[in-house]
Length: 383
Ligand code: KG4
Ligand code: ZN
Image (tube, rainbow, N blue to C red; front, top):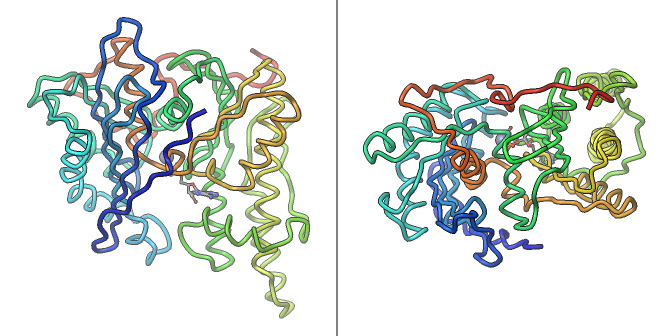
């Protein structure tokens, strides 16, 4: 299995914006059946990363430019939508130019332009959508709209050239926690989703409460490595016996109550223990639901996606459970789990093959549901 996406070069750092460049190897690439290479220029700007990539045949990353705004938002303790949109406007042309030049391409070599059009922050999405529409209009190249979560799922195709549907995918990011049965390329059954906070949101809120700051996920992950995961017993929410849905707001409140009570009693809190115990509660629920869903659906393949999929403990737990049960486990490199445009190029490729292109009326859809073309929602046992 190819794990060749660790090659991150930090290119420049200016006013808190870090440029990264990540490429995958060109070996063992899967080609489309008609043998014609398809090269996609992909754009992502749904939250706080401005990103552009060039992807060939859905799986070969020729360039992957990410301009991260994390340092910029850190001083505010979270993403400020207005600042994010302005930064996207400043950075997007540079990212697209860098992606083309690093891939050794010009716009003439591009077959289609793929862009995230939802879900996400509307102002942020609009920057990418407008850029893609302008490029499509100017070049006459087809425009492909991509669902952000679909992009996260497709990051697995970049890392694992041999992976094909069907498989079970846990998607856990700052805005979403979904259990998705990937039936075929672009065909998804959502079998569970969060009823309240997303897993990443819970990480971010707990990190803020224990004073670790933003972005919460990686900071809780690091603190948890120094703490005792069994120090504090936090609740694991079960929405119902018949559901794969998640709920993290009760857990978040339990952490806040624990911190408030300790403060009232004048007791010192061990932040590392709180981080480790909270993280264990999240990882337990995510792992349990994913393993049960795979069992019920008879899946021999489990994949993970989204920012929370870069969590060390979640990766280890799922790896060990999958090994015990003889299930193949797919976990993209952390840089492909968090937001990037290569994953949008991968998802865009499969949409393009199906002929799903968009017109100049493409708009940002901040609450776009997953699989809006073939959307189904099933509870447990209703396969
Ligand atoms: O997928 P992503 O980059 O953006 C969204 O689409 O939301 O996910 C960002 C989320 C944030 O909530 C961040 O705290 C979380 O992923 N995250 C992590 C880790 N790295 C990022 N959560 C837990 N452990 C991590 N190592
Ligand atoms: Zn994301």
